[in-house]
Length: 123
Image 1 (cartoon, rainbow, N blue to C red):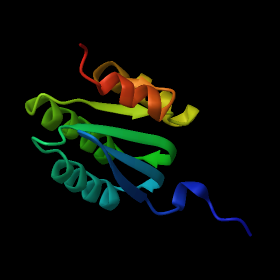
Image 2: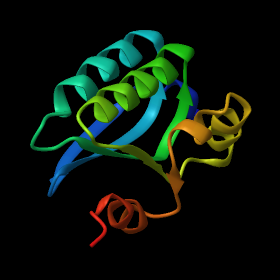
Image 3: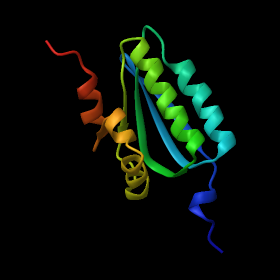
Image 4: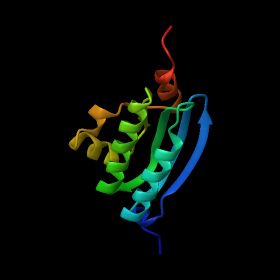
């Protein structure tokens, strides 16, 4: 019997990339896990690292609470003159982001390299 990918628990992998944190999300972001995600994203954003890159390529499901966590992180990064960007969401997650217009608030990039390049200061 195969397990339902929508039921796999949320996995969060965090690494630092200069003034940004790269956050790889995989699995399903239930209500409880989405609240934990909100707290984690809020704690990651700081004066020294005001940017977040969210790799959504492994994310299979996200609740409205999870979407709220992304919006809260957007406001936190903006407050510190940073940005949050998303990378490579699955077609289903991309449809959701488009339907609720989150992709107008938070830019989506096809690759992590493209997202990190977009966060570099222009000289």
